[in-house]
Length: 194
Length: 194
DNA sequence: GTCCACTCGCTTGTTTCGAGCAAGCTAAGT
DNA sequence: ACTTAGCTTGCTCGAAACAAGCGAGTGGAC
Image 1 (spheres, chains in turn red, cyan, green, yellow):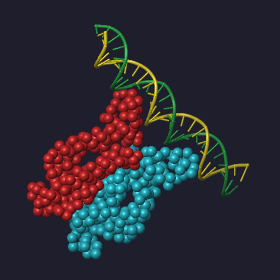
Image 2: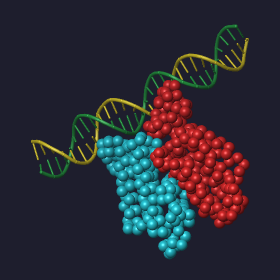
Image 3: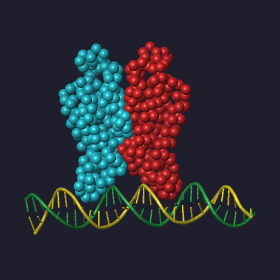
Image 4: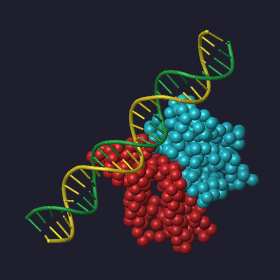
């Protein structure tokens, strides 16, 4: 059922996907999607939820017990891994993310919370990096987190609009390097990475 | 008419705005919006078009005949100015941008072209900066352009979802400074800016 | 073992509402 | 009087949402 919904979102976006199609593509009747999820919004909310769980799982698997800069790099790599293995998943997930940004307050608040959680995670890694002295003492974790998440969301957005032109992996690596150049503690970073 | 459409998009997003409401809010009949624009998609396309024109005008007014780093900074400032004066305008514009990313190929292609144009403009300023030796010779303009536009789009996206938390202006300045720290020619940049 | 009540997953009938089209109205210009 | 532009109204089609109901399977009472 959710698989069918995902396939249709990928093909036509949320707006042009009907609940009837979702049900019938999944091999059921026209009314099932309505009946199961109550409304179109809730179907998509459920989809987003499933994506988030899977994403979190993937990410924490690679980050493990790492902290600071190592954790940050691992999170970055987990994105790239997830992207290579499940490009469609990510694509659908972010189409949902972006297409709901203008919607009702309920939806927007959920989105805002997702964003905030993402920023918090990054800020935590940065704080740890500062404590571990791989990142400069003067750095403001929440600002860096905002920069990183902004870059990431914007990159995905442009990739959604034009997948052929945007080289996701190298762009992410480029940005990571540029960022570390600014916030990294010159002496320590090298020794950590090496 | 377009004013009414904008107001409704701001309030409910594209998805929950009906052509009937647009017409009636503008003081006309339920059918006028349909009649004028042919379809909902074309109404929004027209809105985006108007926004783009206004944006371009604002931007070129501040950039003027500047080039390189100066032009880049001017473009940056024009965004902030435009933002302060027309926050609603920008908001509606980007809701439209983001909500169409999953739509039909036609719409997506237009979006992709917008993004590409934006990247080209930035890359041009960077190239000029390299020629003027305010920016390091080793910098790849198109990569920097992708980083900048990604950051910008992602920042706007998070701001749309949660306007109270995201401090647009300072975030943009922060990022600008961090970027110049990486790509700027250390000696020249200072003399240029001062 | 049989029967009944209950539940769950699904379908089908129906209402409501929006998009889009077509036909027509009205008023202003010529 | 004729035309045209701008607007309205009537109508059709399709989608969402809801309600009612169907049927297979489960559990309990005797």
